[in-house]
Amino acid sequence: MKKHNYSAGPSILPQEVFEKASKAVLDFNNSGLSILEISHRSKDFVAVMDEARALALDLLGLTGKGYQALFLQGGASTAFLMAPYNLMKENGKAAYLDSGTWATAAIKEAKFFGETVIVGSSKEENYNHIPKGYQIPADADYFHCTSNNTIFGTQMKEFPTTNIPVVCDMSSDIFSRDLDFSKFDLIYAGAQKNMGPAGTTLVVVKEEILGKNGRAIPSMLDYTKHIKAESMYNTPPVFSVYVSLLTMQWIKAQGGVAAVEKLNDAKASLLYTEIDRNPLFKGAAAVEDRSNMNVTFLLNNADHTETFDKLWKEAGVSGLPGHRSVGGYRASIYNAMPIESVQVLVDVMKALETKV
Ligand SMILES: Cc1ncc(COP(=O)(O)O)c(C=O)c1O
Picture 1 (cartoon, rainbow, N blue to C red):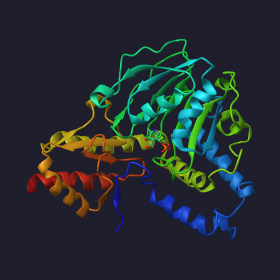
Picture 2 (picture 1 turned 45 degrees about the horizontal axis):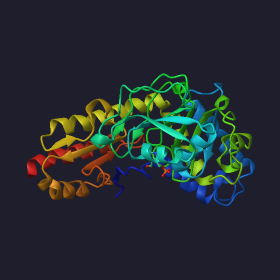
Picture 3 (picture 1 turned 180 degrees about the horizontal axis):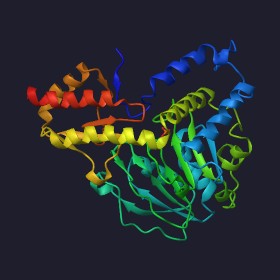
């Protein structure tokens, strides 16, 4: 039986993407060869990379606006250090919003390169909300934020206006909602949530911010080198890029990011309404900052844990336990999660009321 997969990442992808990907593993484009055994310089794979790069910009509304899309390796964790390497001046400084574990990890890497100014932090409240009312120093080399905090289930609903470059880790909500993406100068996202299998990181960068910090940058960490090589500086993670392309094509066929956002709003609303209605549960994140991707919630009475866990497992739900730093439950309802699966979870939550 196919499970209702609430895993935070690697995570659910559209069923048709799994099917097309499996076909390509056996016979890619009727070539008689697997996608896994052809040269990355072959005409067929170059076409995949070109389309993936163009479609990423298209979905974000950034075509023709001076941006480049890259599919790199090393995960979002490598982007944590590539951002300062490419943007922070020698003896420079960068401003960071500390909204969760991944933001903290990004800050840790930036400290290798220069001063980091933490403009706001919700650490004291175990990151249950997005810090607000912060000032961004105008003399920082860039401002960094995390649009969606996968572990804590919070999501930035607004982004600051500033004259310095804005860098955003969108790993867990890329392609999930329509924003004015031209407000961002550097966006990065590990593929393994809303885009594809683990193994590639989407980087979308405004070219004009690069090459200005005066640092000598090792080739693999230099965005400019990757742009020049059209995202093929070395062997790219071919399968991850291909599956990411299939997912982006699926998003486009749904009507693009705005159409997917509508479905995501409906799914999140269904689940949050039940969390707020059901006296057995409570949400973990501040209401105004609730994530539409990772819904964190707790049982009001820990004695009900065993019964609830049995119920959702019997219903075919998988991947629901929360991250150890928050406890409780986390329902990751990424783009590919059908609303019918969310209804299954809501029904289980309702059923618990009749069992305790
Ligand atoms: C928001 C966010 N940033 C960064 C990361 C780290 O990503 P990676 O494992 O690709 O390095 C994660 C992983 O879950 C994440 O959720």
